[in-house]
Image (cartoon, rainbow, N blue to C red; front, side):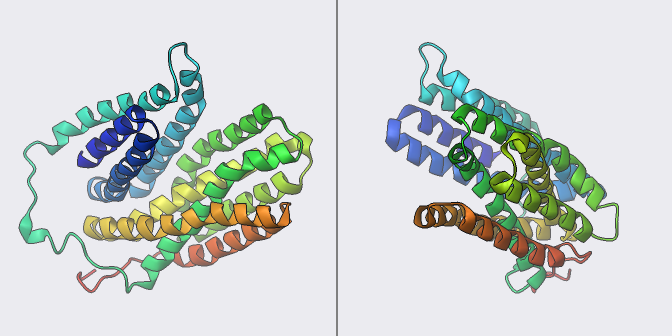
Length: 317
């Protein structure tokens, strides 16, 4: 609830105070988002211990759906007569306010237990499995951020119009809904998650290479394959936060570590893509970089996907 409130304050600031508000509000909104995304896996682990993988699939699907809706409707909102970019961004405070009121009933009567303060945040820095989950989270997220940030630019340079490139990106975003829901369910049906990780990474790698080198008249197909792979990778990465943790406390610590370390790693990817394209003037070096990211995701995913639990010196788990 506190995370949602901080998030709402950031969105409001972002919409009211021009450039200063844009940067300050985005920073505050990001802080609120980080609280929510770290805590939700622990809530799911606590309330749905036997269906954690399926519920994380619903969660990742909701994330993809929300991102797709916002990407599709923000520009039309800006084009409404009398509106501008500030109103278009500020509009998304409304669903957040609804979510705040939905969380209020669940917080009534609950007080923090000071005797559990240490147990609620066990350390995981020395656990190799926790690092594998974190680096898998970060590298697969880096692939997605590179695609979302640079795919339209690459398609335009290959001869597409800006409108067509935006449509192809929307396909990539939209089809993620299918694998974001089904991939965790499939991954939890077998002995462990490694086979599903390999399948999703293969689809992502195929989609990446074909969007760069494949025939333009089949770009909708390449974008579909790419989106299915990205959606499956993201949902499995989120599911691992609860599947590798035996308790809600360890799920919270693993979530904090994986998303803290992981998103720092992820943020570097789009910058490297930009530098490679800037210095080489083409996309061949970017293609090699994509393959390196896929290989890194596969390496750490093979460790993170094993049917094991993280351990901590602060816990008996």
